[in-house]
Length: 371
Ligand SMILES: [Zn+2]
Image (tube, rainbow, N blue to C red):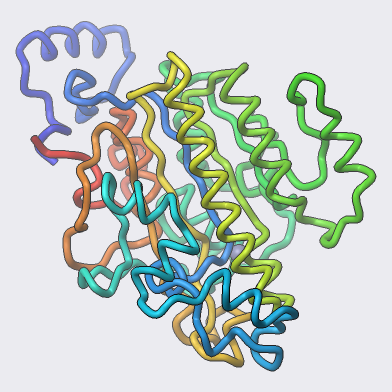
């Protein structure tokens, strides 16, 4: 964490000048130490740490507990003899790239525990904890209520370096409230709302409107992904939040086959976004990805579909960081929390969120290289 402190004389001089004109606060990281200029924060709703680290669970690949329709096809697609093979089959980008070039927290093999601290273990409180950096008891339902707390996205949007360059694409239609779109001024494209920009020659909004909608409040992650892609290409935000939702909804519907499929597709979308940023001058080599989930789920064949304070284990989750300022794993042993994500996003950009929001948890240990 040493790199978060000013060490160079020229930087001190620059800091004094900036302080005099009110541009920075004491304690901000030295930008010369970091390469990250942009952050993409990505969440998979309710995707369990068990599948992240051990792949498909054989005891769910059946009709009774997993609601699986094509059992042999699902086994062929996702079942392998070892946990290493299963997870690499389910999430090839995570296990080929993120786990080797970045930090992936919550892996029991590395004595790493990653947990939710809000005590509710469902979506709004989880996203609020991720985005504001602490658990506020106010967030105790999934109702569409504007968040009274300022998220790290809004805080960054109010910093000179990122002002007007923060955007969000979310599958779930509650995010305009969690991010408080109205107060924050951050454009939040959510749910079945049309995308603000369509890829050239593609009528994605017409297709989205005419497809059957399995869930009224959650659009298919494909549209969220494509909207995020267009935003990166044309609007070039410095901070982009991309929130995928299907994993949670297929799990609630007890469709383990479709839960696995959507996790694998989302891994593919993350790869596509990573490859896209490496092809764009604004982002190549200077963009970090932070990935996590809002909650875990039950641990048993009966209750893996559910989560919440009455389902043991649904406070256990995972977090990942990948980018030019992050070393390859393993992660430091110990417990990290969902609330550490907000300060990590800010620290990657050289901003000290904890100085502004003292109740926020510190950045994740090991997420930023300390020389
Ligand atoms: Zn959720």
